[in-house]
Length: 170
View 1 (cartoon, helix red, strand yellow):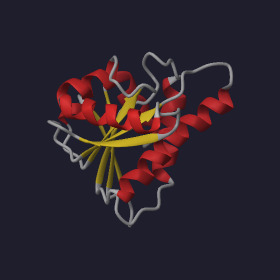
View 2 (tube, rainbow, N blue to C red; view 1 turned 90 degrees about the vertical axis):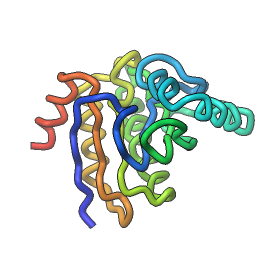
View 3 (cartoon, one colour; view 1 turned 30 degrees about the vertical axis):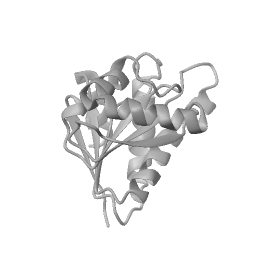
View 4 (tube, rainbow, N blue to C red; view 1 turned 120 degrees about the horizontal axis):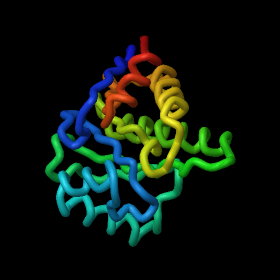
């Protein structure tokens, strides 16, 4: 089955999908940017589940994922992934960001999701170069072989990211 890729400029908390991906921090306790927005829109249930996960396993490592229900969001699940903070170790940052997308997609398949929505992971406060981050995200999406995932939605918060994704997917 061929997975379709869609680009939307908008607010990920309003996107109708089986799974919404959260660019979380390692504490899993909410924060700024998309993480804060997802926690606010999804409600206390998401935070409560994140606290239970933390109590069981500790923090979430960079490139790894954990799953909660979606609370008040128009989705069934939230997959929380911790993106890398951009630094001088370019190869390591690229590998870890790729793992965010790959592990989220693997988890979405386990959940038998048909649609998954991604934010622009690590491109805000974590300073990952937007063009490079988009190229990694698109490459992982284009290389996906899935029997369950029908659509990957890249939800861009700003026009700059939207333009980068549209150029990559021409």
